[in-house]
Length: 504
Image (cartoon, rainbow, N blue to C red; front, side):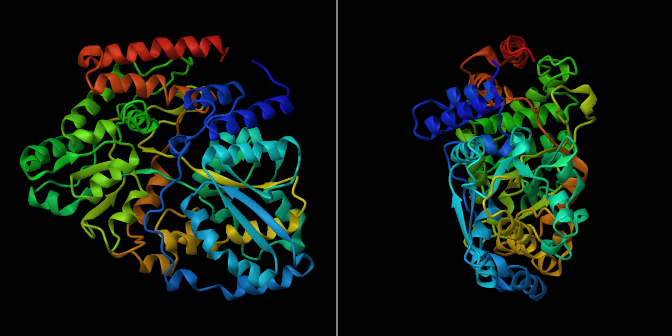
């Protein structure tokens, strides 16, 4: 189906509003947005219809300490814009939640009022699409899932070019090279243009209970084979005590199961699509990866097949499991003061398979690797009625100081290289609320292991429907008789037919 640009954006906005009002199902919403060329990236797919949880975000004294030089620049540059109001809409990413708590500082220094509207992801899409469709300028800054970048690339201002074009408004020390290159390339750039600035990066790492591993004289696993052996040993030794080797986000029919599945396929040297754009999950490597996952499930709490990432996080928080290969965002909450497992978890680079395919081996821009990611960016609307005021805010929000302080407020991964090395961040590499002791590992993971799912509009539907629905039937014993190959062949048949029908 083809659309004129205006009609396509009308279609997207209408579909998003219908889903937000629950007039259509999630399946129908994903089908409609796919037809219009809009998908959703890794972590954000599971947030549709939900609000991202705030796990232990706290603003201590170190996060409240303002940078005097930044404040001076704000006061000097903001004179013509006092009394202006700018608007930014986003889902509840950790940096957005902290930024909402810090925005009063910006207003105090500049006289520019900031309204941050935090809504579920489908409403973010609806509002942004309607705004660019009519060139309304109702929102000055957009939160953009990485898979929306192509769609909105013509509707945002290139921040690098604007920084050069507006030297009188350029924040001193912005240091564009300080943004991690893998994040810039993977999230923010489209056809050579920066569409926005990297802002959020959930990414998979391996986390383990050091006390349990030490008890059983098990070294922290570096490979899939070592991980599998460890979870089997721990389940056998500890199951009577209510502990399992691992826990999974394997809810039938949920995108979280797709996240787990893609990772085990990549770890076996497989790809989701081949270079010929045919589904490849049913080849030898793909089937082998699913068989590994079936083994992990045998050594997981029974509720794993009804758990998304929230349930998986709770397994770690309650002391049910000893090893998890999943989102780095889990870690700070496990170190909170009210946590039953405070100080017991450690973090390392994700387990690796024997080999990895390359992007050239895959289709639709897929990047196989050891660390599944799902990031987002901030984009400056070219239709903003307060473009310069919004630009001042966006520079401040993405500055070294604020990015570091957002990290201090929640312990999540920053976008700037300097934030990882900031003395305030390093000082929190200790057990406690908002810990950053996992961040050196996260930086290594971003720089060396980052993997991305296929970049195609139909992927949103496949990864929420065909793949996790059939995987769920296999894993719960409803179909396929435990045969991983049969399950994968069924998925391949459905996906290849849909891709062919769409002319991709």
